[in-house]
Amino acid sequence: PKTEEEKAAEEEQKAANEDLISCVKDVLGDKVEKVVLSDRLVNSPCCLVTGEFGWSANMERIMKAQALRDNSMGSYMVSKKTLELNPTHSIIAELRKKVQIDRNDK
Image 1 (cartoon, helix red, strand yellow):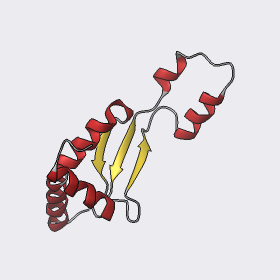
Image 2 (cartoon, helix red, strand yellow):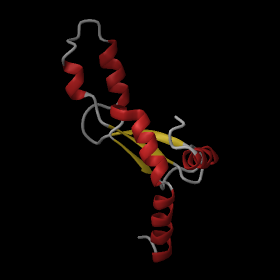
Image 3 (spheres, helix red, strand yellow):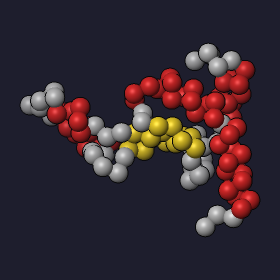
Image 4 (cartoon, one colour):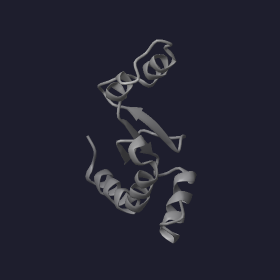
């Protein structure tokens, strides 16, 4: 369980990164379902996570490589992906600054 200070810091981080999250979502469009801040990333700037249901990324890759596949089957089994950003990473901090300076600089 999180303490009150941790919850307050998390809310503060979320508010500080709101512009960056919406900008990244706009740029990626339909490629990701949502963009969120991660509390589990330490060294990486971001990670792409597949949903609990549907195919894993590896299974999607295998199915795309199948020679005799039907093109219609791919659309409904492609899993929705979530992009998790590490708010403490230097790359994300730099992106946050760039978005605050000019939101249209994509």
